[in-house]
Image (tube, rainbow, N blue to C red; front, side):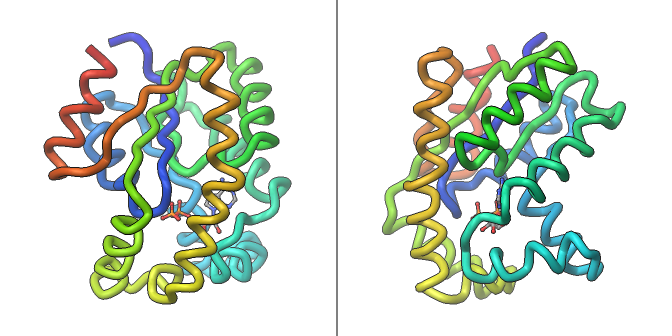
Length: 190
Ligand code: ADP
């Protein structure tokens, strides 16, 4: 299992975080979630958290310069040398281009882009359920959920168009149990 620089794609609620938690065990690489990093900064009241807050509350993207700088700093740490699992980044083409440059500097490009798909109705049902369990503000309001979905379709799906010609994208059906989806993902690495 040599190829370990992995990007995880999928609309909100596709199960990226859940699957990433398992995949990190399998690959033994750090899970780098930009959403988690922003939430952590928000909780700790950092300047970065303050900058991100209004965008996150509306369900839009935090400005690229903020996000790219945060990821760049994260990818300079030693623990990514054996690979990493990127979740929620890149989310638009400028971020994808910036990532390519960063990885060219490290000398190791992305090996796989795992694209987890679920239908819009399932997104809405899952996020409504998650709102009652995890209490994430951006899950609770239907208008915010819709805006996140629209943002995903308008911006993040174009990243897939960027990666497809490079032969990196592996499409995964995100419907089914957590185990079933994980089994599909594991096949990418066999
Ligand atoms: P989702 O469940 O919508 O996939 P995430 O936990 O990945 O949620 O992200 C939550 C929020 O954090 C996003 O709606 C966005 O405001 C911000 N965010 C996360 N990753 C990025 C990114 N790569 N670029 C800009 N904003 C981001």
